[in-house]
Image (cartoon, rainbow over all chains, first blue to last red; front, side):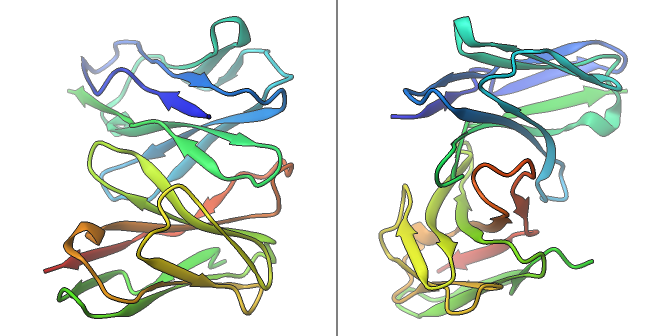
Length: 114
Length: 114
C-alpha cells in the first residue's frame, strides 16, 4: 500500500532561519510521482513541485529547494531564509502513474515568527 | 480564468439531510477527484473519475455517491448526511496521471453537519 509520512506535526522558527520539512513515502510502484503543496491560512492548496521517480536531481526555486533520495524514500523540502508569509500547512503527496490519485501526508504546520 | 470552481463554499446541514456538491472545471481535464480534509489527517480521496461517464472509489467512499455526466462537472452527493461527514471538501482536476501538469484544486467547500 502507498503511504506518506510527515513526522513533523508543527514547526516554529524565527524569520530568516532555514527550515527543512521531512517527507518519507512508501510504494511498490517503480513509476510514481511526488508533490509538495502549500495551504496558507486562507485555505486553498497551492502547488509547489512535482517530481517523478526517475528524476533524482535536487531542485531549487528561489528560497525553496527539494532533496529527493530514492535510497531512503524521502523527499524533503527546505525553505532558506524563511519569511512570515511562509507560514502555512505544507503537504507532501504521492501518486501513481495510472489514476493520478494523490496520497497525502498528514501535513506539517510551519509558523514563522517575525 | 476560472480553473476549478466549487459550489457552494459553505453549507450547514442537519443529520439525515441530503445535498450535492458541484465541481466544475474549464480546462478540458479528463481526470477529476473529490477529497476531504479533516484536522490532522491531511486530504483523503473519496471518489475519482478518469473520464466522462466513469467513476471509481477512493480511500473513504462510504456515505458518498458521485456522477460525471459531463466532462467538465463532477458531482459529490451525500444521501443522508451524518456528523462524521463534517469536513472541508476539495475537488481537483488534471489532464491525466502521466501529465506534466499537477492537479488543480478548487478553493474547498466547508460542510458542517449538525
